[in-house]
Length: 437
Image (cartoon, rainbow, N blue to C red):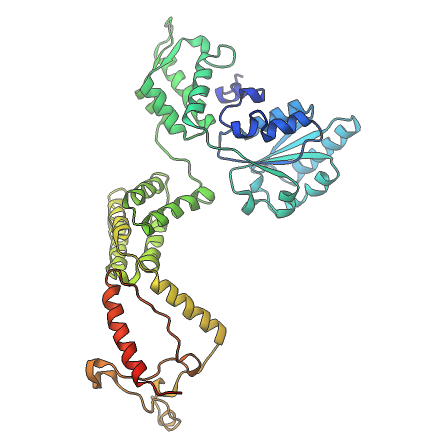
């Protein structure tokens, strides 16, 4: 059985690895580790898919003359871990060191990750974990403290172009003996769609090559890979996106901060990225509703209504028609005047509510539906604002302990300018009539 192209083209030495020069170049950390020789420290290789994590681990094992055991945290359980440790013990008896490579190590739970610690401590194994998720959140601290974290970067377009050319030219491991060529436009499309992922690139190239060869049975020359053939190979354009992973939070953060920064162009781009990636539009809309209150607030009270209208429009139309309503609302939020005064005011009020506990409601603003309550002074002395000029009159509405407290400080932006003028006037009048204590 012929291995997939991506497997056949896997680099066999560090000098063949492209795109991670910050780790493997002369004088860089991986080169230093390998030049120094055993013992090889345990490593966590953190980076996007298809950037060379498994390849680098295999090369390290080869250079260190160690046995390489690979298990997947997605497919493996406790038994697989025990079996790997038993092999490592037998290897030690033969004076052979073991490198245990755990793919998707973040998928192991805390107790499973704990199981490696004593074997790392005694030097039975060198653990190399590969993860696409932030190790700070997904790897337990004791394991992190015993391993070096190396960050792999998404492959640049130049690196992907090099990998593509190698695969087309290599007659032994690649497609070099098939007489295939590729148009510049098809090359650009394939590289762009790969998004820094060499495995994705080579898988697409292999499918495209098969399409060309199958369309020209018996031909002397393999033919050209065109844009149409690449599009057929891709089948559908989907972005790499893990809804439960870091990329999910990175994109929603970029979207939120672009709106907060009043950049409608960036807002539309990040919105498009999420929609194209298959994000739930309702999740995006929930974040926009929150944004309308947190970052726009009363600077433009219409913002909240517009987002709710977008939600209703999306529910009425569905995708893709309803996505335009989301885009319209997102641009409105991005270009609206900004204020976080409500967010700050409510946060301060929550702090006092927690700090002071159940302070009693002042008697004069308590409800008094019964005679007993009235006899106890409930509602006594309450001043009905509509009976006074401008419907405003001095009286305390906060508990006695907080009677001087102010929470809401509107800005001078948007509609809050009017609110500020109105509130400043009311506060001056009330302050002037407040009895001196």
